[in-house]
Image (cartoon, rainbow, N blue to C red; front, side):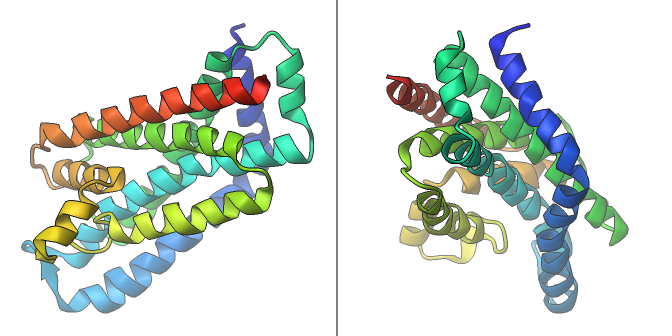
Length: 244
């Protein structure tokens, strides 16, 4: 068995033991967003000729992909600081590439489960969108980028509290500003320029375009692939330094 597969299966075994609790917790936020923003507030206006609820669902998919993929950092930190599991990986014949790949795939898998929950909620509320190959490609690139970033950040922080700060200052603001809840077209040009530097903005745009049956721009996938490559290399580098 490859080393990365062993690490991945370890995370999946942990997830299997917690799947009911995790699924319930992953359903809370999207359900609240759908009820408050999509149904209550969104019932009074449309975005681009579609209901706000239809506009919101692809954004929630992109946000769930980001947040749950990045959440693997919490699992790594708990294992690293409290159970000293990373020390066992250091002693084992597990290369840094295998470690990063295994944890990244675990983050992607958790993100896919969270996205399935969002789509199930959308179905319950009568939202029927298009989920084609470009939709899932954007999801995978988004998840890969943020799972890789999670591994890198988990190696850099010095405590579990530091990880919470990263989530508060990076992931949460990006979740609200990355084209999730509102279209970026109505913003001033300088604000659009800044927000278009965020990977989540491109993920939201690509996912939403395919969900509406429109061809996504190739630029979105190129940007996501670029962030994925940079974050994965950064993760391998930080893991290597942590092992030294």
